[in-house]
Length: 196
Length: 99
Image (tube, rainbow over the protein chains, first blue to last red):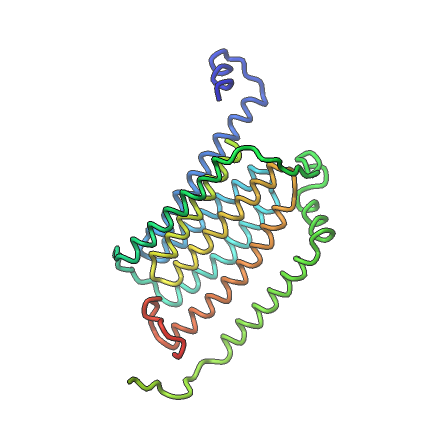
C-alpha cells in the first residue's frame, strides 16, 4: 500500500500499477456489495425481495469470479444460479403467495445469533494464519489464456476428475426421478391421525 | 487485497447465510440462506484456485453448483408437497412426518 501512495504522490505510475490498483479497488467494491446483498436476503420480510437480493449477490459473485480469472465459472454462475435456480425460486414464490413474516427475537434466535457470531470469529481466525507452504499448480493465467478457460476446465474435468463428473450426472438423474415421483404421486393419508 | 480479503468476504457471506437459516421461519428463505452459504464456499474455492494457479478449485466449485441445483429442485418439490397437504408454510408448525 505504501508503494502505491509513494507512486501516486510522485506521479510515477506505469500501466501495470494503475491496472492493479483499479482491479484491487474493483474487487473491494464488488465484495462489499456482495456482503450487503446477502444482508438484504436475510433482513427482508417478504420472500420476493429476498430472492431479488439473492440474484444481486450471485451477480456480484460472478463478477468476482471474472476478476479472479475464472471466466467459465462466471458464465455458469449467471446461467445456472441467477438464471435457472432463481427463476425456480420465483415460480414457487408466485405459486405459494408471499406473505410477510413477523419478526421476533426469541431466546432461541438470540442463542443462534451468538453461536453464528462465534463461528464468524473462528472463520476470521483463518485470516491470522500466515504463509504456509502452498502447492502451486501448473495452470498460470498465461497457460489458461492460451487454450481458453472453458477448454482448460473441460480438459481437466475429463482427464483427472472424470469420476466426480460421472457421479454428478448420476446425482442429477436421481434428483430428476425424485421430483417426478414427488410431483406425480400425490400424498393420501392412509388413516386419520388419532389425537390422544 | 490478497487472500485475506477473499477469506473475509467468504466468512462474512457464510455467517450471514447461517444467521438467515437460524432466524427465518419461511422454508423458502431458509433455502436461499443455504444457497448463500454454498456461494460463499464457491467464492473461496475460486479465489484460492486463482492464487495457487490450479484448476482443481474451479472443478470443485462446478461440482458444488451441480449439487446445489439438484438440492434446490428436490427441496422446492418437498416444500410444494407440504404446502399442498397442510396449506401453510412455517417450519415451526411442521413438526411431524405423519402428515
